[in-house]
Image (tube, rainbow, N blue to C red; front, side):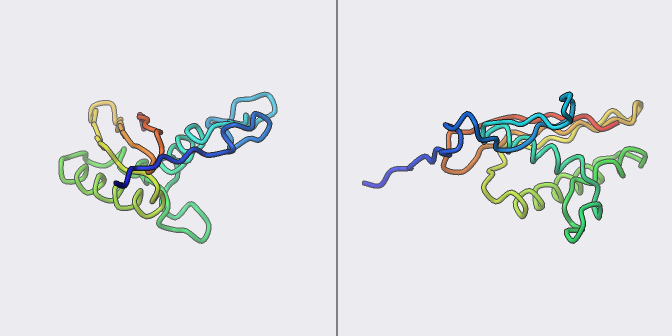
Length: 135
């Protein structure tokens, strides 16, 4: 009988090898390394949401592009379009992630968009939630 085998990233057991860098850059040496795959994936997702479309060289479709919606008229059509585009891009650029729930909340009087993403990493025990405000 087959079973669902969980993958453990071996680099997570090596305390001297960094997997990525934390966002925001706030360490005195600018880059604060992180040592766990879970943290690296979360920081990669934060980087995705903070990137504008066309901002990344040679990958013009990478990025959440959320800043462009802050000063537009926020309505359900815009949010539905934005949600579907984000889901499609996350499936393209992060194929190892299953999107559990994606909510885009609005505060139109304050021009704030909040993104809440619940996700899991395929074949691992990594489950996490990410919440970002764009103002």
